[in-house]
Length: 242
Image: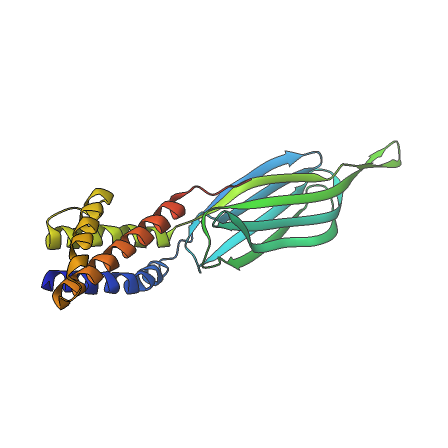
């Protein structure tokens, strides 16, 4: 009985410490930058650099550089950065916001921004670049303007570490270790089925306080295991990206 009480107590402590574990992990900051997009389109060279890896609640830096190969008139520019939470898109930030500007040939324009990663985001983030522009050339003393169709491109960006999954993995590992010490068996569905049989057998002795406490402890462990396993499996599902 003492082992079961101890197990229930440890389970509660492990659950309560998941939050502190993830907060501690979030203190590590990665400043390394990586080029996630580098391409040339008629009249323009576009490059997007961003923080290579981050964790929830951290900041990521994003640099968008546009270099004109001809005289260029940008009519619309927007770079949106999104993350994923439970397979749903979550906005992290935007660069450009529909701005318009002109660039002389061989000149560049740089957008530099910092965004905070929402606490519920993990896996790879994505960038989506939307651009409408035209180029101007001179031929025989006559200026020629060429309009291009709207340009749109999606690409993967900063990887956000899933600290919640890591915390859950540690919880399950510690829970299994304690379960093994207390019951002499691993924490598996088959062994939980055996405990369920024990629970049914104890139902006939409702008047026994010790048995009632034992049943409560078994149910608590079973509930925690199934909840933890469900969360673990869902959080391991790969997220969609462009």
